Length: 481
Image (cartoon, rainbow, N blue to C red; front, side):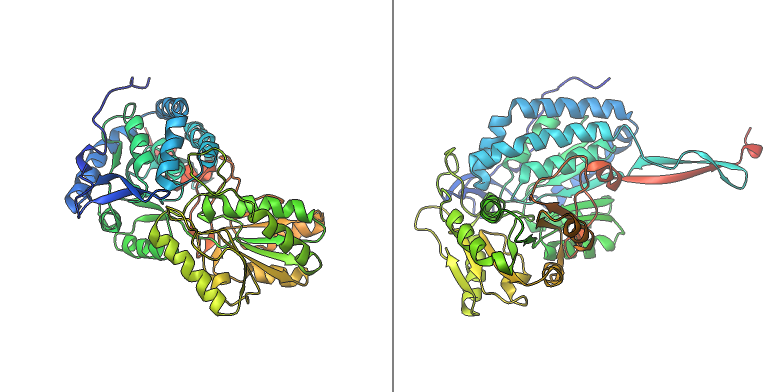
């Protein structure tokens, strides 16, 4: 049976720092630009200590029966659900998400933990049998050992839940490094988890990219799972290759949204405003690159701009707020740079296109038209509240436009035509393809991208397999006593 809850020192206690410390990482509320906490950057020695703790715990945890691991995960999920409002408030304050967005994401957090608790108790492998050499063969699923988890700043709690629950359910010990911009909900998550997990199974390090590099380079880490941008993913893959680590990468996206004239145009436009500007567009699956069939283009652009212009901008803690700030001044300047270059290159900014005159890092909901397929604003991920709308003249052209980027994370098709649905879901080169919806995922279904959006899967039993190794055992019974 699983161990009872135990009280332990906070996982972040050793990293506390003063906000005035110039060498500390300072956490800032993006809606107010005011500092809320500070943490010192973990050194190589800190990372090594965390990895060694994990290594010491890995064997015993890996030998723990799946049912006991599941019982612990279920208890963790229960506590997180009980403290959902606290978590949502932390996420809203730290990330700048409207409180309704943060609250809406909470059920996904405990659902994936509970799903992985059950998924680890079953395994889809070939049936034991006599396949060759008069011998009996079977497959063992075993944990990898010590894994490193690196999570992003846009959905820190949800990504921590995805990675921690899968890694731990599969029997691994883990070291997690959240983004230096948004560590607060992960700290609470780890503290709750460690009330139930054996000591050393889950470890936390806080810091910036130097901390992440130390984690990736550590020889005792046998797998790295990263959610981040493409350049970071390439650097992690290159570094991890030196010690032949397994690498899982969930990277950027530039989701094409194919809107056909047979869909209800105004309703579709309103839906896509929600899916494009949720979390201020800071979502790798955001409906950011809309391609509209020519005959519906003008009506769609008018309806979309009208709906986007009505988004309620405000204090993320206000339940009436629909649109919050960007995560940092750096991100705001990055988004503004994309829009300014697009404007200079001849694209039309229909609405928005400037920073909002208020405290916080708010950038106006922006719609851009008349951009060429080869333009930067079409080809590169902005990761902000900037939506492009292009005109398509045929199914073939729209499909080519959709696939004509280096990303391959997600796409959506908006149509009532079944034949078109079947064709486009087959030919779109993206890891997730939605029809008449966007952004939603299911714990039972795999999530991950193709091409420059990375490799490996999260969610579903495939997510457990990512953190497992499979061993073929072959026994010749004639020689066994």
